[in-house]
Amino acid sequence: MKFLSVKEVSEMLGVKEKTIYQWAELRRMPSIMLNGTLRFNNDHIMEWVDACTREANSGYNPFIKLEARKGGKTK
Image 1 (cartoon, helix red, strand yellow):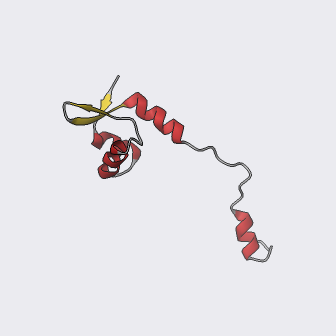
Image 2 (spheres, rainbow, N blue to C red):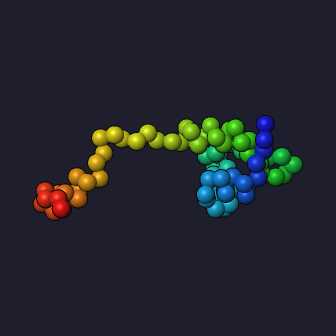
Image 3 (cartoon, rainbow, N blue to C red):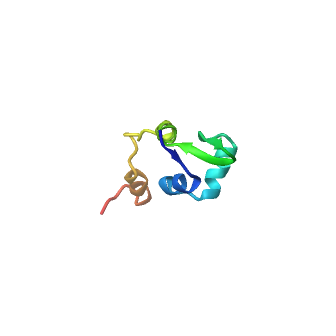
């Protein structure tokens, strides 16, 4: 079991440290307070990220809107 700091989690997720503090305070992500310091279990964070992942919609085609704007013509 490895515990991560706010800085490590923010770098891992590519968000600001302030955002990590907000998510933890709102209980939107798993966290633990150890001796007054906010820490994150790496395994729990990875499970949380997996749970937040949305599957791609295979029926989506971004070119449909582009074709509609061109009046159905493609170059």
